[in-house]
Length: 162
Image (cartoon, rainbow, N blue to C red; front, side, top):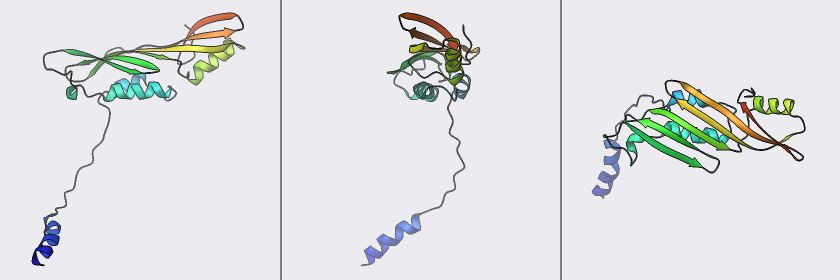
């Protein structure tokens, strides 16, 4: 009986209250997300770009102190990102390509106004990023069809034709 009472009271006595400071969780490569990200970007694009930004190089199997840069490939069915990280795990540059993603509203609107009656059958979204230069390329190659006619055009995320 004494052992039972002692067993029930000792965990209560052993508990200490420790107050922890607030912790803010953010992506290590937030500048990349800020530069390439868009509220209107397609969901697969945003998800893969977030994965690239949050990738922890130093915890990965490929990490070794002897290399200056590391190239990591990220794949999903809708696209891929080739990312280069420095030895500290900072994102240096990316090359991104996604197929058949939804276009942002300004791009869609520009296509509808300039090519009424045409149907978009496929598209390719490309982005390049460099930490020192920012976004170098951010455009959509779009295939339009109107009956027997086929047309390929390029438009950026703001609706400007190239």
